Image (cartoon, rainbow, N blue to C red):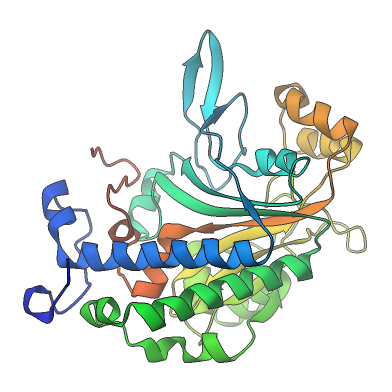
Length: 339
C-alpha cells in the first residue's frame, strides 16, 4: 500500500498508552514506522553479510539468561519439570556460537519485566527485539567501529529509500546530516558523570547513567556518540574488566542525539573460566546456575566483543517518535495488560 499525504496525520506525536490493536495497526503512522523498520532490518542484514557475518536463529528459552539490571525481572517457565527462562538477552549463547562461526548475529526477541516506573519513560518495552552481534578476536575499538558503520548504513538506506515515510512522520532527513558525514564521538563514563554534575544532575558515579542523565547529555549532541568504560558492578559479569584500569569495564553504550539516549550496549567479553567464576560470585549469583556455560568456558571459548542494538529504540530515533511503543506492532508496556 502506498501512503499518501491525504490519509496521514500531521504529527507522529502519540498518547501515553497504545490504542486498541485495530486502531494502532491500521494507523498510517504505524505503517510508515514499520515500513522504515523493515528497511532498517534489510540494511542491517546487508551490511553484516558484506562484513562476513552469519545470521543464526536465536534461542528463546534456556536454563539461564542474562541476569539483567536496573530492576528488570526474568520470566520463568516449566520445561518438563525444570525451571527455564525466557531470554532477556542472548549474550551467553552468542559467545558459545563463536565455536561454529567467528562472526555471527541474531535478530533476537527478548522479554524483560521492567519496573513499573519505566512505563512512563517513553523508552521501555517488556517485549522487544535486538540486533545481537558477536565477533571473535575483536576489541572494543573494532566492535564500536562496526556499530558505527552499521548505524550509518541503516540511516543512509532509510534516507535514500523511505523519503515518503519520513515525510509522513514529519522527520526531516537533514537531522541525519552530521551522522552521515562525521565520525561518532566518544566520552568515558567518568567524563559523562562529571558533565552531568556540572549541570547539577545528581548522577551516581558507580552506576549506569540514569535515564534522565542520558536524555540530558544526548540533547547536546548532533549525532550518536559512545560512552565507554563503565564502572565494574554496573553491568553483567560478562563485560570484561580493563586489566590496565581495574574497577572499570571494556564496554560501551551508544546514545542517540536529541534526548533519545541509549540505543545500543556492548563490550569486550570475559572468557577466562576462573575470572568468570569470580565475577559471577561478585555479582551475588551462584556459578552452578551457569554450569553449561562455564563448562564451555573451561574447555575454551574465544575472546570476543559484541553488542545489542534495540531495534525499537533505533526505529524510534530514526523516525523521530515520541514513544518507543510506536515502533512495534504489538506493544507490551511494563505493567500494562495487552494482547
